[in-house]
Length: 227
Image (cartoon, one colour):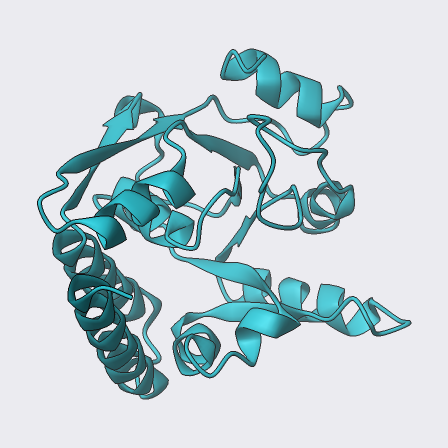
């Protein structure tokens, strides 16, 4: 492992846990959003990565939504945070147990605003109850509908159906976004050399009514012209 990669890993570990503990004592959603954004900006600046938002005008300034994003790298949530920078939209991320309990990300994830998805549990009632409670408190929900990181060469892998249930049960309009850049490869390049200057592009789609009966995956692909 190169010195550059070791230095970035130590810095990211320190920053992630420092912000994680800071977020523990913040209750106001907009203040929590501000701190999450500050964290995202610091990490991406250290990686020499900037974020370009296409169709920014399609982002609502406020309100509650079910935000759907594709997922190829661990920095994807940071990219979404940057895209929503100028809005009052605050969302809780659906987080898998592995990330929720991670020694690296766990403190941050638990305190920054997340809802635990434990697929090993036989009953999902508690999960949907947590989402209902979060929505009732005025929050949006952010989710990767693919259910896991896409490690294939495809632009998108199959959507899980859980997001549709969330939208219907909570009457949340769906805000689709598509991270056009392969974020895992971008992160790899940043870790390889500190001279790499990169731009990650995220595109904003049109709002979709939660009662929409069309195939969401096909709708998403058409909207973002994904082959």
